[in-house]
Length: 566
Image 1 (cartoon, rainbow, N blue to C red):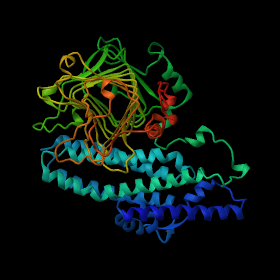
Image 2: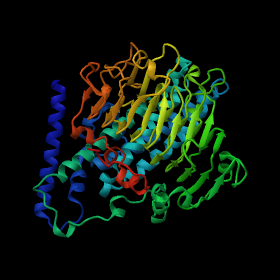
Image 3: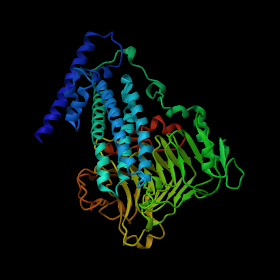
Image 4: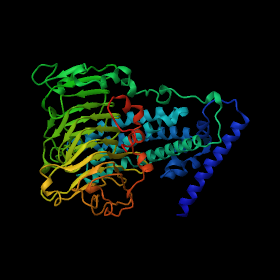
C-alpha cells in the first residue's frame, strides 16, 4: 500500500512539475506557436520516470534505454515503445513459426489462425506506430492506438488458445509471446499517461491559449485520414448510399440463387471482387438460404453487404470446433469478417451445429469500425465471436446458450433482442464471456437498451435451468449491462465463475439503470468488480467514448445512441 501511495505521489509531482515548467515557458514567450497541451506532454523526462506508471517497469526501462538516450518526452517514448514492440513481435512470430512447423499436420486450424491473425496484428502495429507520430494531435488518435494494440493481444491469445489440447505445446507457444505482451502493456500504460496528462492540462483554467490559436478545428483536422484507408468510404456519397433504403441502393454485385444476379453464391462473388476499388463496395444478396462458409478477407476493406431481411437472406453452415480434424473455434464460423469497415444489413447468420457440438460460431468479427444493422445471429454455444477491434450492433437478434457473445473487442450492442435458448441437459446458460487479458486494454463488451429474454423452448423451464449474464473468459473480463430489460430467467447472482480455480477478483462487471425482474442487484455475487456503476462511470462505455463513434459510426447512417437513452 505504501508503494502505491509513493507511485501516486510521484505521478502528481511529475504532473505539477511539468505544468509549472510550461506555465513559465508560456509566460516568458507568448509568441511561440503550437498547442500548449502538446508542449506539456512533450516535456522531457528520463526513461525511469516515464516507466514509473507501467506494470512491467524493469522491462520498460530495459527496452526503452536501448533506443532512447538521456531525457525524452512521453510522446516520443510512446512511439519508441511501439517500435520496440514491432521488433519483438517480428522475432516472436519467427520463433512461433518454427514451433508450429513441427505440428502443422496435427493442428492445421490453429496454425492457420495464427498466420491469419498475426498478419493482421502487424498491420495494427504499423498503424499504431504511424498514429503515434502525430504528436500535435495525439488525443485524436488515442482511441485508435489503444484499439490496435489491444487487438494484437486478442489475436495473440487466439493463436495460443488454438493449441489448448496440448498443454505443453500451448505453454511453449505462449512463452514465445510473453515478452511482447509485457511491451504492449507498457505501451498502453504510456499512452494512458500521455492522454491523461493532456486531458488534465486542457482542463486547467489558468493556462491561457493565445487568441490567435483559439479556433475551432475542422472535422478533417480533428479526425484526419488514416494511411490505411479507413475513412476512404466516409465520403458524402457513401453517407447518402448508406442512408438509402435497400431498393434504392445500387450494388456493385448481386448474388441470387435463382440465377437472376451476377453470381449464385457469395463466395463466387468474393472470388471476383476486384483487387482495387475506390470507396465502398456494395454486395446485394437476394433472399435465400446460402449454405456456405464465408470469409471477408483482410484486404477486402469497406465492404457493405445487404439482404432482403434477416429471415429471408440467411447465410448458414454446420461447422464446429473439432479436435479430430483440427478445426478451432475461430475457424468454425459460418461467416468471418476480417476486412476493416465491414457493414452488414438485413442479413441472417446461422450455425446449425446444435448444442451437442459445443463451440460452433455463427459470426466472427475482427473488422475494425464494423457495424451490423437489422441482422440476426443464431447458434448455440459461442454464437457471436466479437473477437477484436471496434464493433457495433443495432436492432438485431442474437441467440444462443453458452458464452454466446464472447471475445476481446470494443463492442457496443444497442437496441437488440438477446434470446437465451434451451441447451443440452444439465447445461447452464451464459450470455457473455468477455476475454480481456490485460488490465491496460481498453476493451469492453457493452449491452445497452437491449432485452435479454428466453426463447419459447426455454420459457417453461426458465426458472429451473440456470441462466447468467456471463462469466469471465479471461482474468480482466469487462462487461457492462446498462439501460436494458433483464428477464426473470437470469439468476439473482447474475454472474458465474469460469471454473473453481479461475480468479474473479480482477473482473469488471458493471450494471447501470437496468429494468425487469432480472435487474435486481441485491443478491449479485460478492466479487470486488461486480457492482452498480454511476452514470459518470457508465459514460465511459457509451458508443462515443468506447468506440469513438463520432468519428465513424455517425457517418454510416445507422442510428445509434451517442451516450444514454435516458
